Image 1 (cartoon, rainbow, N blue to C red):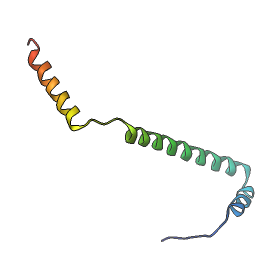
Image 2 (cartoon, helix red, strand yellow; image 1 turned 90 degrees about the horizontal axis):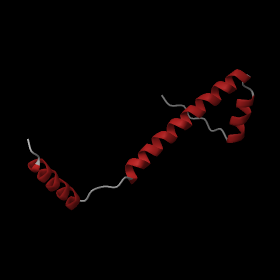
Image 3 (cartoon, rainbow, N blue to C red; image 1 turned 135 degrees about the vertical axis):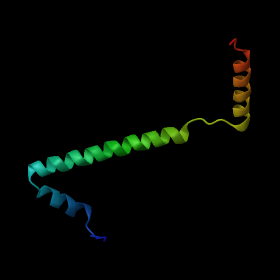
Image 4 (cartoon, helix red, strand yellow; image 1 turned 90 degrees about the vertical axis):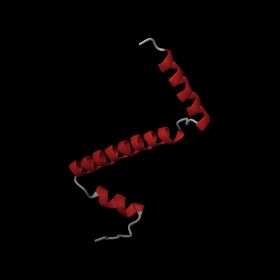
Length: 75
């Protein structure tokens, strides 16, 4: 079930101002924690999306180097 209400910003502020102080503080804490969680998720997502990636030739070079290092070790 979905309920849609068309309320503008000033109406929301008016409703918030009618809340008791303890409920306003609770609302503030909830909003701050959601903003913080959203920022950390967004920054992690940006880090992953903007991280450097290897081309196919980079990966081949790395694999060849690993094979060479593994074969040259004295076991």
